[in-house]
Length: 141
Length: 415
Ligand SMILES: Cc1ncc(COP(=O)(O)O)c(C=O)c1O
Image (tube, rainbow over all chains, first blue to last red; front, top):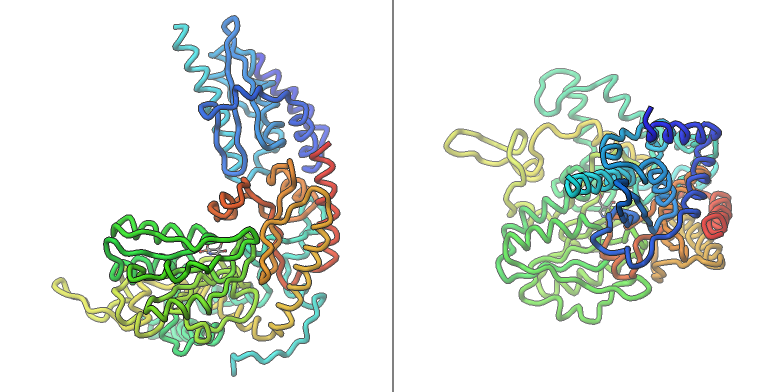
């Protein structure tokens, strides 16, 4: 099992503690509140993923062949989602990131609570992470 | 049977709530508090039943069959035009065109009347508080024709500024299209005055009545508007249907909208002659079921004491406004003197969507974001608002619970 899958499984186990949407929501907000903010200098337009109701800034850097993601949002809930994605995706090789299937999003029952606009926001965040990974792969190839 | 207002029920919210089965729903096991009425209203049993009846008992195409079912469907369908006419107090049934909703009504006028009358260098006038559906069709028209879209500005209270209206209404202005009641802030505009001043210069006026029809009686003859559009789904009716009113002489001069069946009188490969108004604008098999259910919605309005319902909604508005405005961290956006039952607000330092989701976990339905009025949000330099919009079936108890939960959202999201 890949590291990514293992982390995904751990997240799914964490969420199995919650029965209600209310509890999941509160947990994600708490994750968002704990996510360290992105330094202002990185909150530039080229790092911005504009959503309908919130914006995300995603910054990627490389260390030892692994990609480190830092991100921020004006929505605490979205920051919580980012925190989960970072747990799964940050500190991985480009290959791992490109191949990540991220089934946990469905398994923790998050998608059903997201209006389409928000689900698309998450989708564009994932897409952007994968694009960074592809970019890094090409640079080092 | 008369379809004119003849209230048979006194206004009693407890009784009225029984007419709306969805209000008994329990999202996540919580009591539903539905405050998203400006997006779409809930439907009374009578409307739901009208849809079921049509499909279970007399589904048939209209105006085409010689058989019993078709006759019945045609009669039911045809009777609704008169009900809509009375509902908005038009002079003539032929002035009512069935459309998909407000959006299609505006698009119809822009692409027929607009295409015919707006030329390069001309101007179309809208206001700063329009829904995107009363901006984009005109923008598209202006782009096509080389015309310019002009804007009536708005003050900090969310009211239109009419000081420069005389200059905005000039010899280049070919049509004005203005929202009667704004959906994001609830402002009720002085449309009658605007219409009068536009008419003094010979300029026709279209009114976006999407919100107005659900929160007070509308009288298109009193307003003297040239066009008026509304959506059934915001006034207790089904989705996918609405009406466009147009003054008969204007409709008669206008070119058709779409081509197809129903809208023609004779067709040959050399030449087609068009049907009369309103059929000229209703190509294809109409939305029979939803037209019939729109009729049921109007019947329902006619059993209500509408004046009392609107007065009650105003009470809800003031009750909620008073309670919310003393909550620390709440800033209400839109404080027009004349306002429908909409409270739009921001929470300082808190993303509107986060708060909306918090309320959702408690069973409260509100809308967050720009409400399809991005220029309004830009005007107030905010990314979006939380909007609670009330209908006559809402209660003060619901508002108490809502305000309590807003306070909790603030302390939870702002630790
Ligand atoms: C003021 C206003 N205009 C136009 C519309 C568009 O209505 P519809 O989407 O039903 O065509 C709405 C509904 O959101 C509205 O509130």
